[in-house]
Amino acid sequence: GLTHPEVTVTRADGNITPAEYAYETGQIDPVRVNQLHADGATVILSGLHERLPQLANYCRAMEAAMSARMQTNIYMTPPGNQGFNPHYDSHDVLVLQVSGSKEWRIYGTPVELPLKDQEFERGMDVGEEVMRFILEPGDAIYIPRGLAHDAVATDETSLHITTGLMFRTWADVLAEAVIAKAHREPSMRRALPPGYANHGADLDAFDDTFAELVALVADANVGKLLGGLREDFLTGRVPRVEGQMAQLAALDSLTMDSRVGARPHLVYGLHDDEDGQTRLVALGAEIVLPSFAREAMEFCITTSEFRLGDMGGDLDDDGKMVLARRLVREGLMQVL
Image (cartoon, rainbow, N blue to C red; front, side, top):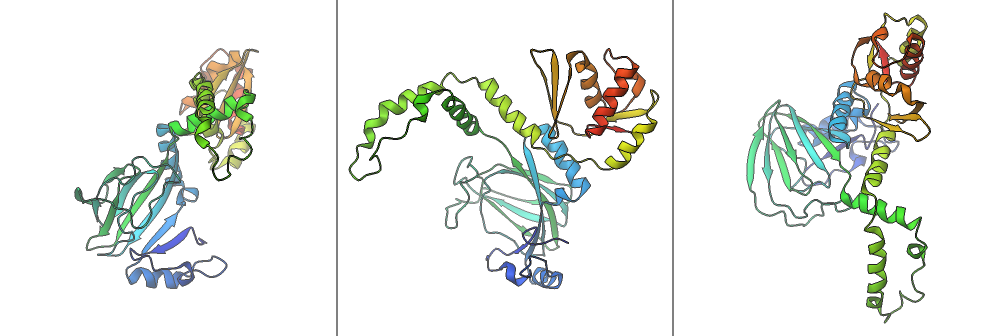
């Protein structure tokens, strides 16, 4: 079953502790959760995209479109109640109203485009209310990070899904640029001057040194840096391969007339090496094949359904069979 913090219970007053609805082991006490919900608390189910195929597929489709990692929280709020006071999130969110309705209020932007560690702090001035509206089932709203908001369920229980969009930023690119340059420039790896932390040390005396180091980063290869972040994104996506055991069993009866196709929502990278090989990176896997197989490989991972014998590219039947088997084994293709 679900445990804390996969399940949390909250109210806008913030006075509910995990001990009120979870055992010391983290197991949830469903009786207490329901009691608290009946008394006005919001129940939050976190990370259900890890458990529910429908949410997993939704997140995969969004990740493919946005080039960002996704996470979901489900909020169930009783009539006339709210789970949080006005606040902002340090990541962008997309709210999907599933059942019931909720009145949303939008305020100012205490921190414009906050980074992950620039979280909302109690007591921050959220500004005046600038917008108010009600989300009905099927409605959606995008809330940029840093924009303060709160929401109150109307006269019926509200259930909505919040999708968190974990975008990388140009600050990440700059940080990668500094690290990459530091691996090549000894001057960036020098220790700070002895005594710099002592009282009375002239810290402004190092302005010129810092300016020289910053100038070293100015010629960074942005394409290479972005390529590195892209590879991190591609290799960090955990495969979802429902029915993979049956897929592997089906390989024994694969023929040129078999119907096959790409797994849905694949995000991939194809790179040609100087030694005449093509690297395919997807779902944490890396496949290296001769470059003459590139066209066929790209056809396989971008085509939802086709007859195996009709595979695009210039491979002969034996080559098509070898490639199809490899891609099915890696979870990138499926036998239909």
